[in-house]
Length: 589
Image (cartoon, rainbow, N blue to C red; front, side, top):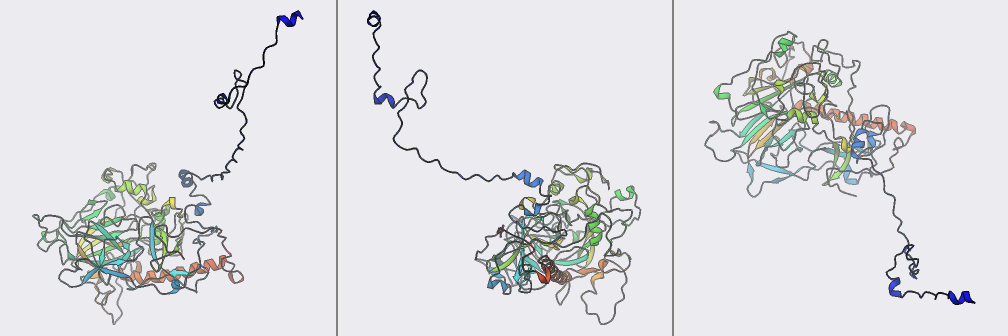
């Protein structure tokens, strides 16, 4: 009793008010054992999020482009794993009824508000409308659906009229204007360019250009205010930009109208006489050819002048040796036209035409879309203003390592970089009003893949030749400059052909003895590859080549589908739809 009286019981603690419970933490602490009362509102259900797809980085995709699955990268996907080179097939919708109709005629719009006319004539120049124009990374050509080609998804090559060698509406800048025959062109803006629909791949080809508006007959006016019309012309590859003049970078070789100078890499040079020395020593190769001093009357290309442009290229076999890295100047002494066509040296790649094309509808027409060749880093360094080729060694065989920022060795046939390998026995000669002025360039850059390559980031396959890789006749105009081209396939022929072309357009009633003299005047033995021919003849050859390769592709896909015992489409499994029209707003069904 005494114990209970001395130590009374402690009173029971009261519950805190509700205002205190509102400010208590969710997790009780040792100093505050009371916790928040459980809420009567049920907790919300957690949101179930989809698991994000893990994508490879751009650097990793580029590093695996040369692997076995390189054809499945990028936007253009197709499953085509074959032991031999073969075009890709894509998962496409069936052709529409209009796709089987012949291609529509090109629509032309007159210049507004005042018609653009030829000087001294009422002939108008027009702007093409509703065309799929070539742009950086994409190239377009006409296509048509044909029931005779079911295994290659029905589409084959075609072309609208006019059907002859001409300037290409698709391969031109959007500011270029054309005559109704597609042989006359002009431009009211800054430098813009147009290429023809034919290309030079081997042999010697020639075309002419006449200046209708450019340098006046009395010469440039030093007191003229504002920009004056000018024209440049020459040969350009597919990588050359259309919003620049011919000779702007390393992908084109041009001739200027003012001062009548060769232009390459935006650097002027002089005409020269080719070296006649047969010595193969290094000292003889280092001797510069004698330059040509033009007389005063030839120092400008004036209105009314006719300029002839001739390009000489070695055979495709020799070209393939150069880009394959097995060219030996001690053994390969000729231009390759005397070598057997079926002979393939060890290490050389087979010359094969592989066309990865996807048909796309656009503005009522069908086009083949191709991932086009783009400029490479070595070529950008080659065209850079800081690159001085005269200070670089000219060693045929170099052990220097490849550098993205600098070129350590001047271009040569055995350069470590394929894009900077030059073609032996190649040249570009220039004529004025039928007279040979001189040689503008020698040892032109090679263009066979891998010297030309498409963009890797778009998923294109490397090292493929689609049959249209080469040097194209090209014309660029500035501020109203107007010119007309002549490819030699018209009834009247050339305007001022040189002596070795005089018999190509005249009707021949008797047999002509083949003298064996090529365009340079050297007697190297007669060979069709050494005969100087009009560029217009290449158009018919290209049509024949398109027909042949369309048939070859159809037979290839026919065998992939199992031949006569198979069915259409069984050779390739394509589970996904390919994205078409990477450079166009294609029409959907």
